[in-house]
Length: 250
Image 1 (cartoon, rainbow, N blue to C red):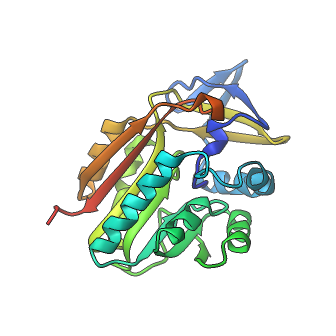
Image 2 (cartoon, rainbow, N blue to C red; image 1 turned 180 degrees about the vertical axis):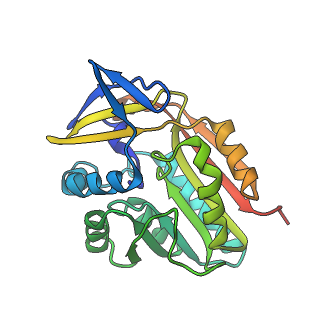
């Protein structure tokens, strides 16, 4: 999954077939589009990886508010005595690089081998693995921080608590979590991206639902920010950011 989540945010090079999804399916001209499985999503990102990386080389340069939040998160991790951070769903590595620039020792995973290859080539300072973020290949309490930067966009709301519990498992105590995601808009459904046929649904999560899932997984919400979409960057939804602490705040 993509770290910066700009495929649904910017429509250059991407044709949107339908922007309205009813439940788990969308009726599209007589064809019923099922939400893709996680494995299917990873496979599809392999197909579009090179095009995506060329179109969106650095999302933080044009989004200073987002960049500032990453650095606030990094400061919290460092203040708590942590230095190792995991970027899940790293995509071509934009957030991985920003975490490193903020002074953290970065590890990164993505389920798409093609995305990991691009990230490793562009930002070799980090340590990468191909892995599913729902089953992380790390020991308990391995990291002081975990960043999921637009990486929950394919996870249904009723599965977020389980995913966050896995994030919590690999976080030390104290440990910090940073989430970025789109909100306040219906899901987007794509059948084509950069000239390739795809079958992808991008979810825009409700902030309250994300908070509830975090609490169910044992996190304490520390801060929540939301900004409106940047029309000059062709964003199609508001952007939400949550920083959460593993367990109660000390």
